[in-house]
Image 1: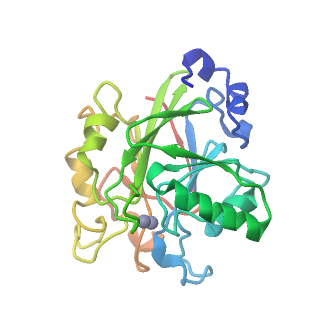
Image 2: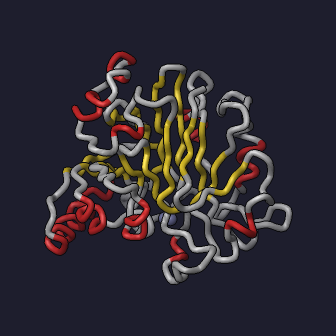
Length: 301
Ligand SMILES: [Zn+2]
Ligand SMILES: [Zn+2]
């Protein structure tokens, strides 16, 4: 189903029609001038053993979009959902346990799950087991293909390839471009975790100059070898976050046209010593560390 601008501005009604059951007030399409993202978690897989009382603790990475749907969701994020918010849709990036947790989804009452086609059979089995354990309802699992957009209650979601090995030979890890049409323009957000750099498909298909990105959330898992100004902000293998935003996605260059002053938010932060306190303020201009519970309203451009 492809909704045009008229359908977008119908707002809550259009959302309900395809089953999104989040907090409509928080911003169904057309209901708010921007795309509201709440970081339920901003850490990578290495945080499980860190005590929650630690000042630098980060939950596994997960975001709530407009109170309506989730990108990734695990047990660690349960306490970060706003009170009464029960989104019924999760879009998964990949099958790693710091992103994908069928039991947590079933417990939440999720009814629609979207993930890459290559591991759909595995996911079905996982969710069936989770339903037996937790006692909820089996959600509908929708297969996704790279570069084939789909419509989710008025949001256009474009799955793009992440440069990330999951251990499942048939799985392609995904990153997502989320497009929302607002009264005064469009928000096109790239949510990129986990990925080592950005694959050329992302530049040539995901953010063409006629439909540039206006917002970016990017992983920064880190690698002890890659450093920037003495601080470690690299991806797991190759290019650094800084490389990407000073070269390929330089604001104003065409592929990335954010509203003035809007930073790129870094998430999926690795390594214990990278706490918010030690790291914030030391990033190159235009990059900002996310933290658990941070809410950002990405304005249209
Ligand atoms: Zn991860
Ligand atoms: Zn991963």
